[in-house]
Image (cartoon, rainbow, N blue to C red; front, top):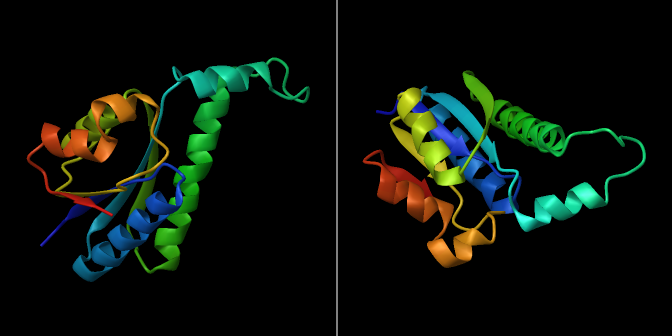
Length: 147
């Protein structure tokens, strides 16, 4: 049925639910599960975080911090999928505009199904332009299940 399933994970509770549903289906189908976390540096929230960084990492680059937080989130989701019995699961992080980065990734990896959260931790631009899941579904012919 499905060979490669993508689960978009943003660290939110809804994102966690999307990973769990994707893992359940991947296990049933014997599919590979790819967990993807996308981060972007240019929101007002992220810019404000750079002003309140702790003294423990005074020279830390904000992109490096965001990359590490994203890596931790992706690994957390990967671990959960393994707990649920998925044998072939991989975690990835990418930087860029969320919807286009997700679409590029699952086209590149040949995914035949994507699980996304309906309301996650998206940037404030999503209020004006539409949610990431809506954008992804409008940019591709690959089935997108919104959790």
